[in-house]
Length: 332
Length: 210
Image (cartoon, rainbow over all chains, first blue to last red; front, side):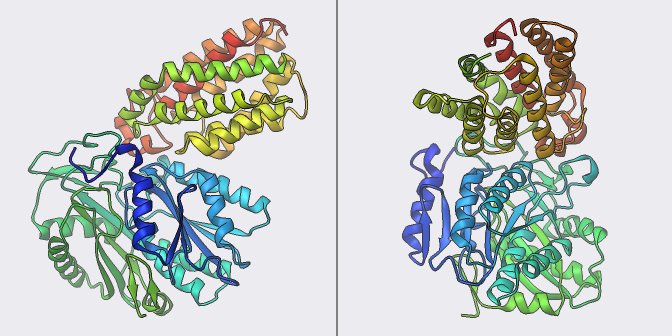
């Protein structure tokens, strides 16, 4: 294992110290491992919190700020945070208009957020939860823990964050978040494994000429293993199950998001984006907006994922609205 | 049984978790994310440390302290599941300072109800429920048939072990293991294994009579 760390057991704490030092506009509670907007709680605004295991940076801490999240809870690497952290964050962002929990669909995350929501409700805070589950790689969803929450989470946080910033109610913000999730689908591939610092060795083995199709963001197995193809072939492998799952044609086009898994350079992500755009054009799907870069990663895993969200006028306006966070900023 | 006996049960569970930490993590590596032993050991060590600091005065307080500590230190899915098990047991025992065998069985049944409500597992899903449910059923049947607590708990342990062993052949339908589909068959469920330790701790630490 070759990593820029001091000690495998203190990576999360030390990274939080770095975030606090690099972003004085944020407030970092080291004890609870929660990153807050500097001005939280914002009076009268719906508070948005998310969180999950660490190792997916910039998700979620890098999306805290104006127009996106009010707070993010950091768990250990690939391990859900605990309800105490989420309860603390919920109290810290409650500006009187209620709090939305954005939760990726993993058993641990869902249960811990559920307990936190019950505790917050007992404290008199109105909480609504939206669970993201956009990963089409998980097929047999009636007999599994359900589809995993992956790339669409970034877009949910951006769009729901803008809705909250506009002063919409908790029910409306939750409704927007659910709509983005329902109209979003993702699929990913890995070229190499990631290595969890505490484990010290790669999570799985992949031969030099192989790729794992349908990989999860924690190195969970995908649909199948195949011989490494060209960017054009990979784009087709990723797009085909997404378009097969939901009709993306018509309407106001899609938000197309090509995400890097952490170990793939941006130049390759742009090669992929060109192929994705061409494939969508061929399928009659119009692109309204795009996002390219490593935004929901899996440590140093090489690979990428594609997320499409079927947009409408309202979602596009919210997408274009100003955002100022460490990892996403525009319009300001 | 009094609060000392119940505290001894929880401490005995912590001891068994520590002894079997590597086994639990090893089982989890095959079908999960290789941290069940590490997480449970961290949680039960925190419970023992809290019990060293203060001895709760009621059974409910003992179970609540155990549940809250597990929720806030274990993480993953096991934290909420084991935490809810103890919190519901606490809610089912009011402010009693001692429990008779029937009330203990009732509390355990209530705790299992919490696990089901939280995890939405059904029999055969390859989870802790597959070992816990036969143990609770057997405990109730044995007590109803006139057995003393000790023999009833030993029968419950055999039922838990049988349930645990049966998870090997099951296809996982809950948690991270469910993503593996058919590939989850042939592996023993780590949650069913740790909850069998909880029953084993009861059989060894709780008094033989009522």
